[in-house]
Image 1 (spheres, one colour):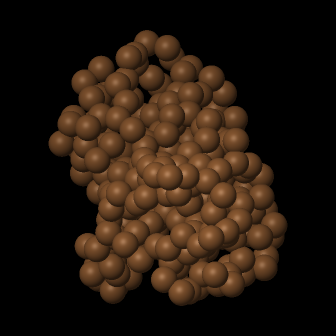
Image 2: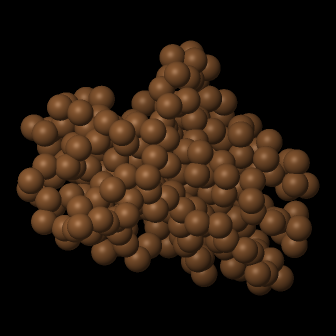
Length: 255
């Protein structure tokens, strides 16, 4: 076993979770970062394995659920597993990960929630305090990273059951919400949306994005489009765009 080596799997649309994952990885040292957008095969044993993701509709993205379900941990059953979810208002999905790992013979030893800048642009405008929220996110992440360094074991936070119930119908239809996306004449075919989509839900046809109805509603395509050409219904045209101020487009593309 590589006794000091850690692995963090992350899922990110606007960069909040990528920033959390990077900050924890830096604190741990000798830590590999891998996106949960595609399946991955563990090739060795690790001291720690973590899952970092955003809370969507009071739960975890379905892509994250599928990823953890498909992960072979047979050589890492005694590894220290941790989960960190980031969101603007509520925790969610950590108990789901715990259950999946338990079925495989592993254990989610630690779970934490990091409050981030709320950015579901399809539902509300972006607020102004971007940098202030980023500072608070970093402070909370630092505390979480110290606990992970110490292999802290805690009670895994539950999802907000009331919030989860209220968003259940929305979550059931999330994969096809991209039917409500539209592309304006401002599109120049730069392929930014295609490149940042973490679940490969976009293909380019005649230099314009075509949505494949396997959406996670991370809104990366809307938020990162340099010309604000992609919008949700008639709701987002005049709303400011957001990404974590310390994350740039190249980070999202290359991980």
